[in-house]
Image (cartoon, rainbow, N blue to C red; front, side, top):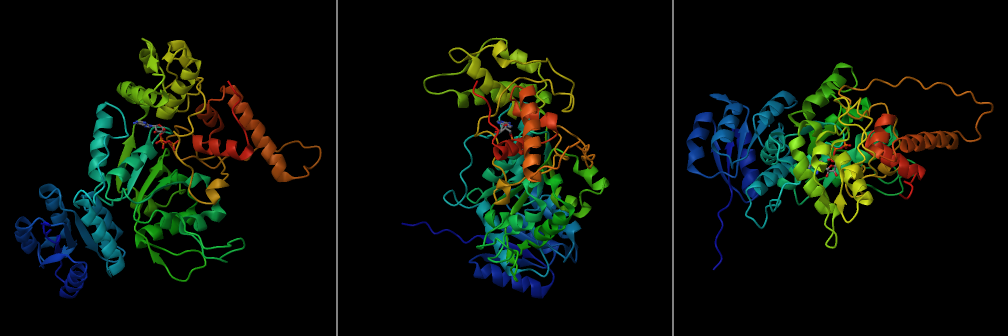
Length: 504
Ligand SMILES: Nc1ncnc2c1ncn2[C@@H]1O[C@H](COP(=O)(O)OP(=O)(O)OP(=O)(O)O)[C@@H](O)[C@H]1O
């Protein structure tokens, strides 16, 4: 006998009879049971009566604010997501509600296609096991420190909402990993996770990369293409190095986030997109706003919930679980990799300017020098015991090598990502403030003009990168730091210029 499953029930709270009716009809057509309330008092009376799959409330009600209901539902009905209906253009209300724990919002006039997407996403949260994402067996974020434990708990909570999250932390500290974890634990887990390195896309191609283009939209647009937003539809879009977005693109991005619609280049109509936005940066975005390099309104929209990833040197208790996880990955059935006594102690004395990524590099390199899979202190080749705190003074690090191909995240997922070459000004490793415009490079005393400017510049770029790599024994984390660019930018430039690590 098949068990009959009750329809999910939704509570609509709105004093405007017309809008309430529109919402009711839409939800009933989606196959849902609907209760309605015109006031907070009515809603409070209904809430204990049913196990609601979603509460949808207006922000202004005759006897109080919808925000009060958000707080009450978040506190007393943990499994019931609550979304708010906000007045047109009222970013403040939406952000305040999300900060208070609302699952999501829709703005008036309510676009029914967007409402449906939002409701479907809410229903997936409490869907029976077959439809819900399987919870990950273990968090990918390893570490026993109090701060990592708190971070894991925060991620579990945040995964249940649509609120934009801004992740801050030094290069290599695990920002992308945290974003992947949020996605994996969310009801979006079955949909794509798209990570975009905003600093690696040429400005001229940005709009096409983010929003896609129609065939013939510009010279070379031989066929229609989706952008990052369409690619991430139903899932999560990570805007990595978001501080590197040019101002003109910031305006367009804000619009797409607010409207939840994008228009392909060359298209006349917009299309709805259902994308959760996570942003990440190692820069101080608030300072970027102050210096006029980042728009206040976009900052406000992205920074709804902040997540801080502390540098590894401030959570040395994580070294044990992290090394265990890395060694388990590096070892094989035939060869187990172990640390000799004192190795952990030696690592505890190091500042890790490149954070967990650098720890991975150090151990991988050490394994190459070790005998029988036993890593000794000398194999770590740590040069300086704990250089100055902070990223800037921490260049005298370990002579660790290149990271394993699988450990660093994928570059931006679009055509331009594969060609992107960005100026390095805003990618200081460990920099805590928004980088200023770079000083103009000194003019080269050239006898004759080069036959080809691009070739000439590539050669210069190549020479400089090779010098930085040689100086750091091919430690790409440190070479990037020396050159004031991010690890990913260096990796990309190396690929582009065909620079390879010599065989060891
Ligand atoms: N807590 C952790 N547990 C396990 N692995 C981790 C942890 N934190 C970071 N890593 C690993 O360290 C490497 C760097 O992490 P990630 O790419 O997420 O850093 P990031 O802060 O996004 O770096 P960047 O600023 O350079 O983009 C990855 O291989 C990631 O898997």
